[in-house]
Image (tube, rainbow, N blue to C red; front, side, top):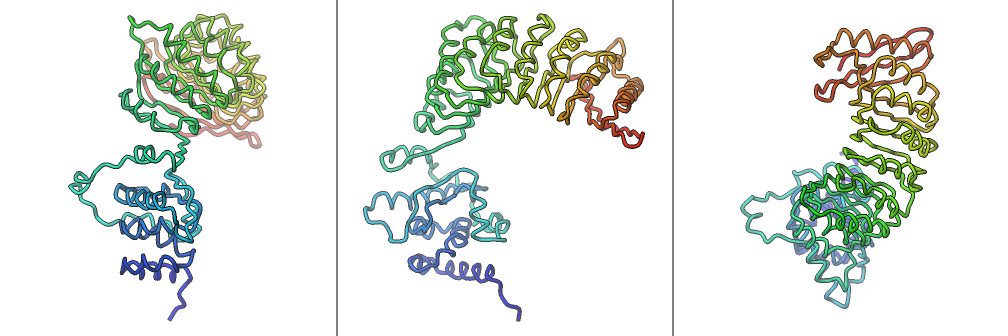
Length: 456
């Protein structure tokens, strides 16, 4: 007979206890600490709600990372957990061994479960351990709102939420939800739906209460032609005065800021590491204010995709690139209407971005001659690892049709330039954004040999 491993013995012991739920509950006071995590996993996935309540009341660790187990429908088990926690709150005398202080509902804690129950994490999260639940039983069950549960016990429980993702356009529901939350603990906020400007105006005062937020991502904001904007702009931009930890800001289609970007920039009180303002009708004054903003002097990522830069004086773009040249690592200027003259104007500043490792110019219209100059000016950037450029305009017919044979010839010319430079570089050539094709080639210079990747 083979010798049982300690892991197997623990599993057998946990399974044996669960054959009699009443005995399992009675044994919790004597159960070795190392048996609690594997037993809890089996209780949780088996929906043994009474044992689950009892285990919460006797939990021998400070931290219970429940979110790491909540991969599938969990309404009944979550409610049982909260019932067990409620019993601790309502009884002045706690079980002797209970040390629970933190109930963590985030999708983290897998390390805790895998370390305490080493080697069985995959098995433990399997749906085969779940007791079957019919759709009818879920419909009959009362929906549980953990936020309302915690709000009713705010004197005993401190709720900490670090990441908020908003996917609903119903601003009234969102406001009700946010008023139940401790906004000052939020570190990341994503608005993943399209709002009207009036909705953003309602959200703005709550944003100002999110003093710890570090990352803010906003989806497009729709503006009516008949909507008064000035008050809403001030309402939104003034909140940045209170965001003292913000380092990552991303906004898509913030048309309400056109001509008013300076109002937001002057309210920034921290140095940003990443800034993305995309598909935005930028005015020259907006671009000027951006190039003068002190908060971008340490940027590592800058994404201005969708800015139409053709109508602006090139010197402003030169100043902007010069402002971030010492630190920027990722630079995206996709679909900016950049032509040969605009590219040539920024090449000297671009050649000084020595930290740059990703550079994208997709969707712009550049000639083969401009592409050659681009490769030469970026040859001295030691960290550049990924380059995404448009296929040269000579690759297209007068009707805008991509000519694959012509493209292959131009690729060969670009490859020859890299061979002369003696560089190994990976470059993606992107065709018109309306065609959705991409070509990839790598030029590697080893003992005079150079190779070209396949069409993908």
